[in-house]
Length: 352
Image (cartoon, rainbow, N blue to C red; front, side, top):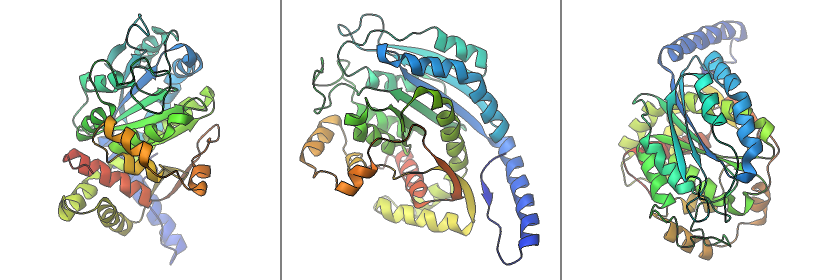
């Protein structure tokens, strides 16, 4: 059953409860006939990632079952495995596995790669994200990519020991690649394997912000399946509000600030009195949001070097997460409306 439903009025609790059940049932029926999910695992397959690869393989059938059961969604899965560019790694840079509706096929995809190699600290993250565009996403599907990683892309100025300090040797730029994903309506969730990812956390937050996605910090591999299910359920629910969001973005115009546009969407969805699943927590840092306005990696490196350090309170909130992110079911939040605004503006090519 979907978590997208209308809150009951407090004026008449008995009739409200009955009305809520009817509303919940009708919306669930509507979602059952329309919900489509195209979900891609973008997985670092270097030596340090063995526990996460095994967790994905062991739980993929349960992930499929839960999403279909709870959201009545038509789900297909794809995968992109990546390691690094030679000479850092001589096995492969990326492997693209096409969409399938079979959990058995997906198990086979994951089983066909193991964790090995990697070379220097960064990996071929940018090449893997670029390869998302090679997959045959369905036009009307909710499009979600889960980047599961413990190392940054090449070219970050704050990463020592980078074999390609000037950026990915294929000439791709992670900021422009993420913008390209956003224009195609592909939402990127960056799943950071902590604590290894913490020095680069703000950049992973930035990549998610560009596409209207979220950063999710993990302390252990065993909770990966829960993160996959909860994140995709939130996106399926949120996607049902995109039509209203796109109308508000169009009405506000390109010149409106992102804050103004998000406020318009917030007022609109509040009229509908909706409740849905959402990740709890502080969300992306102010620095990550500002960094998302940078057009390319060189601009982001320059911004990151010159930006004031995060305030102590923000830095503390952005510190290591719990082993499992927490979720709640509550009224549509301003943070979600900011994501809706980002998605809608990005599909029009409106960045910055």
